[in-house]
Length: 387
Ligand SMILES: Cc1ncc(COP(=O)(O)O)c(C=O)c1O
Image (cartoon, rainbow, N blue to C red):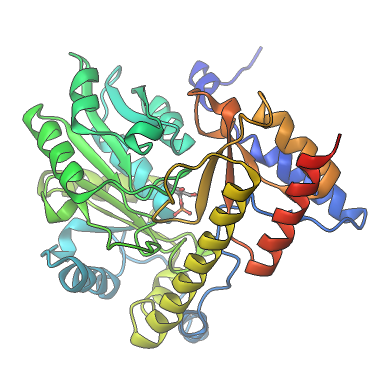
């Protein structure tokens, strides 16, 4: 009998898909659903980016680009690092990829030998462990908690570094917590990985969405890190499937060959459209949206605390709040399904982000308006008060 590979056992699906399917089914019956499960901005792509994309499509820009991505776009990204982070990143080290997802596959495919261990935080972005397994590696998760702001530290990484460990994956701000690794801690993490001759992949996809302090790129401390970023979140381009990867000098050739073989190139119309992403008119729109996300975060955070959820620190970035709901339930998954059925509020259960006490947590995404968030909080209150 034909069957899929044994590796597929380790590739999990998203439980939130079940929540979303149920939400859709309820909506089709006329129920009003408040969506706080969705990990993408509700805003559409800024108009200058759309206009630029249309202009290029009309000129027939529908062919493959060079595998590494348009040089003009890579130059804009290089200029962004120079202006925003005061670091020089030559365009030769920048690869345009199909989303951060494409960047993650290239980095892991380039780095992993069979059986290599990769350290990563639990809870964390689930694809990191799935993709590590797919490329022959062995994810080694480190349980993080409220005490360490749900982020890895150099000490924890050192503690877990074993003979088979090859590197570390970080995300700051993180999904699902929105917490940021402080600059000093990031520098220490990079130092540890370099002392151990390991790699460090820094996922900076939520970088533009930070509300209280600037986000520091791993590139500010080392040109030996792999940096992942994307046009999906801050730029509001999830469906365009466009991101980027910055690699150290030694990996340029490998990344090029991988891009050619895996993707040929990132979507060309998306690359042309993104040429407008760093324009002042686009940035103005994006910064206004960031301020709106901040307003939403403040409303949701205050509301959840008032209802009795435990969130010791207000998250500084992304658009998520990871809330401890153990005062109300010992199973966040069934809690999420019941909340949806009874009150029409969709949230993501902790089980999607790992095995570290997932039943205690729910992820709330503030990817909907302040008015809808306020309505959602009212409905959650009613849910909690039901006998
Ligand atoms: C931490 C993190 N990395 C990577 C991705 C992938 O994003 P995309 O492929 O849309 O750029 C996501 C998406 O939610 C994410 O949360």
